Length: 266
Ligand code: SF4
Image 1 (cartoon, protein in one colour):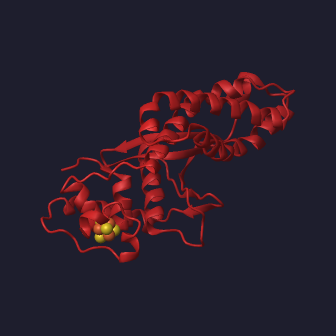
Image 2: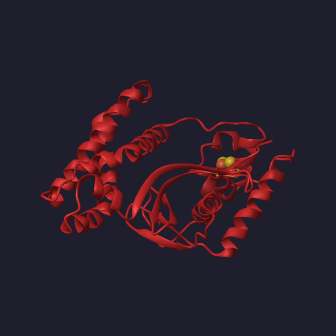
Image 3: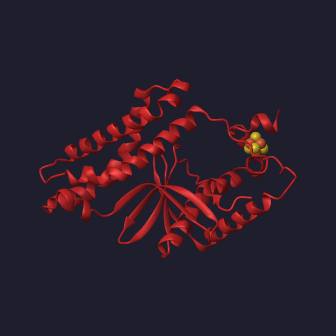
């Protein structure tokens, strides 16, 4: 039995109970596909970027234009991505992925990160604050790929991005899909679970989170009802691990985009 439940398991459970049962009880792994490899490399690039962002900002001086700031970040992303592509060269070759295409897709994504930082950096530069002091005084700060866990909550996860502003913490969950007027339950559960984990780590209330889609960022109020729902789902999943019978299948619409189709429907 798992000691700490991964937040993504909560999402899988909301998507389809049977899918999570197959994963946890029958230990069936999802077959790795191109999309998963690209996602893994992107997460690693963002993790490496987050650890080295201070170097980019500490090199920015008051004579930088907006275009110069964008270029400095862009070059840093390119060099970080190149190193990661090298490290993942075997997987990239195995799936016949095009590195140039991957870099261009990644840079489009990275522009979202850069845009978030332009206004706060420009505003400090106008006050004559540059280089290392610029990094120290930069607010808000954004950290990507935070690994977080709590024995008390019996949860663990990796948050795509956390905004830290005036000593308050805001989780961001990044989605590759476009927003279509619907926030899925699994997305609400995910961002709420991250809020609970941040609360446990930093001992302060987290009442707001964000889901960033490819076309829009949705602010989410993390209510107590949502928090209770997450804890209830967590408990249900711990019980699920003891069940011998496979849960009923999900609705067919979901099955069409599920990697376990071949198991459920032969
Ligand atoms: S194929 Fe359908 S029923 Fe089976 S695990 Fe996937 S979503 Fe659930």
